[in-house]
Length: 327
Image 1 (cartoon, helix red, strand yellow):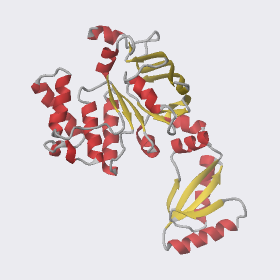
Image 2 (cartoon, rainbow, N blue to C red):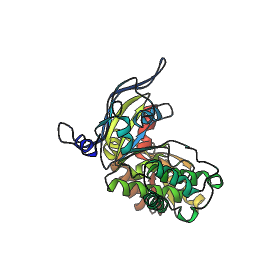
Image 3 (cartoon, rainbow, N blue to C red):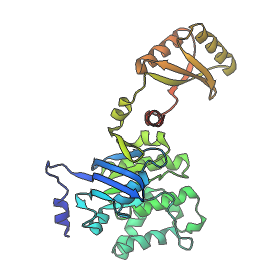
Image 4 (tube, rainbow, N blue to C red):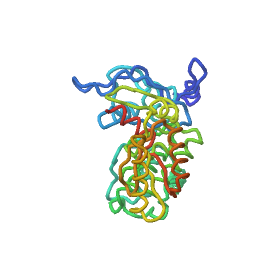
């Protein structure tokens, strides 16, 4: 298939460009249904988070999208290309980075990346240009001559990310990419993915580090036992599951023991208006009324003379949604 034909397929009947389209996609393993009736469209330029508990169907979904396995039935398109009819064309537009992908022990980092770049048919000069750029993106240029066997788990993840983007894909599928990364590497990962999305690449990412997804995703989908329970812009999904009662962590300035004792005494004087417990070096409060209740409590504590240095929800919005779904 010529490139021009592929580009023409990027538009659907409504003139919309979709990076990934799944229609009634199902995945069975014998009698077990891993993914059931998945209908989902993800546009270009999104950082899309697919979240759910272990066994929700995330990896099975990614394996189908990456053309590593066929769905039991249903249709999937990558950039408008049917992955069952034209898998080779679909692969040219995408990259997949599975959780804990191996790296060869007997190759240097640059040799490993050069091997993959050359496998795409790039000349030696073009291959070198690409792996140099990718190593700079993942902040490993200074270690290009290190052998892969000597790398930490987090560095191996960064090398695999460089390998995944060596052909500058339009769709990047990442399964737990931050696994083993230190906080600095995770921050770098967020920056890389946001830059790629700004350039038009669609990034689909799964992770159990839910706060990380909150910081980088523009949209999310929630999988539960193979079913897509919610899907849409991040804040809309969080708001749809907003509880009437939220937990807030309060940390106070000054001597912690003394200030916590004063705060607990004050709260107990308010009868059952607030449920509080001491944890995480401060006090965790259950606050009724969502955002308005949180603001009113902060105002009350400030007027009572408490010097508050931290006042935050105990979990991310996505995390709260998952807790609600799995209860």
